[in-house]
Image (cartoon, rainbow, N blue to C red; front, side):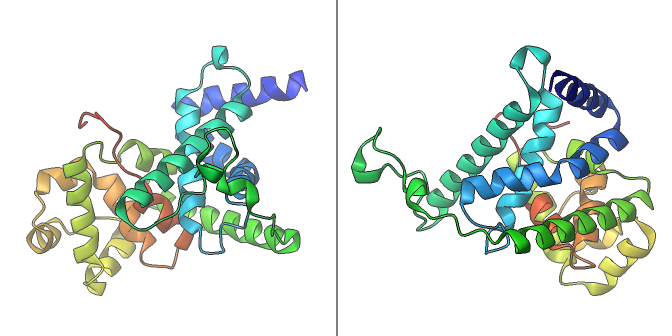
Length: 246
């Protein structure tokens, strides 16, 4: 067990600075990431909760970047990061709509348990295996697509907007591009952004697009071939509070 944890820590240390190692680590622990998502939801993510799996993937990667040995064993640390991210997601959803939080205290008592505790485990484990396999396949295929243009998941994550206004600008680019199949096709074929058309159509400054080129290329590619899990991951990646634009 000590040896296993030592190996994980070594992998995490490598993944901090090596994009290929980071991508490999995410693929290797996709089962763990999905398991933590299921644990939180008490149902398979594919039962209308694809976004949550995507958010969990992001949280795992953020845990890799933030982890230090003095924070304890890595997997429990990553599990907490995933849970916290998912809780934040539900709080955000609640603010933007009529959503009942799974963490609502039962009977109004803070220490009386949560609504989540009353939901039965309905996971079909045979289906779980099939979905996990499909998820890994999609991630692998998208990773290979990015590699064609010299990009990795780590590149994309590092290039995500850090401020609300920049994130909103990038989403305008996506919203416009989705109405222009020919532009999406050009991105798919070349891995390059048609800057002039995207800027004119979305009202986004070219400098902003260039600064977040890797993120934009990835998110546009995700809308060309039905990468449902990847779409959710990239679309849910948002700026951190107080973040400074790179």
